[in-house]
Length: 228
Image (cartoon, helix red, strand yellow):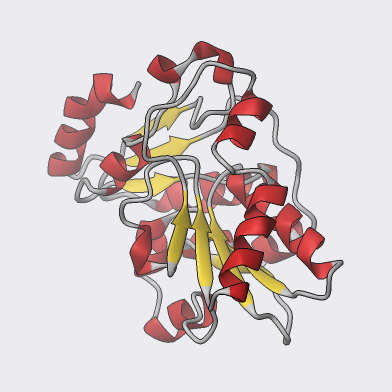
């Protein structure tokens, strides 16, 4: 429902007012509400607005770090905090990464391996799907990096060397976000997302329908490696 307050967000951006807008129900996770209540284009629409920091954390650790640092110190322009309605697990290793301010840099490597042959880039609840896919592939001997990208605007403000170390271009990559894929080409070779309106069904079924489950992501990685 960010569309309802879009004029206020735009005015805050024009005025450089440090306002925090909090939005929940960030994806298809509460699927029974149907497509009228499922954001598709909204994340990209917010990111497209100049002067707005869009923050979509993947778990409680990221949320605490981003709320404590990015939102409290961002004094020039509004921040849109995008939260899930469904419960999300705390990801293994996210506490250690966030203690070194990985989240506040807008993007960081959550999972790495020196023999990695692929990179998964995700935000919000889809970071969990990326980690699940990486676990499944690792059991088959395929090592995959997982990059969390909770705030594009913060990430773009980082030094180029840091950004290139996170978003490697020497191995294939795939973005995962339960929303429009427009804009992801700057960070990944290909994208998994939703470029149609949603459907009315239980959240787990909707994620499966749109191929955004860990198993579906793992299958997409296998397909791309086989045809690369």
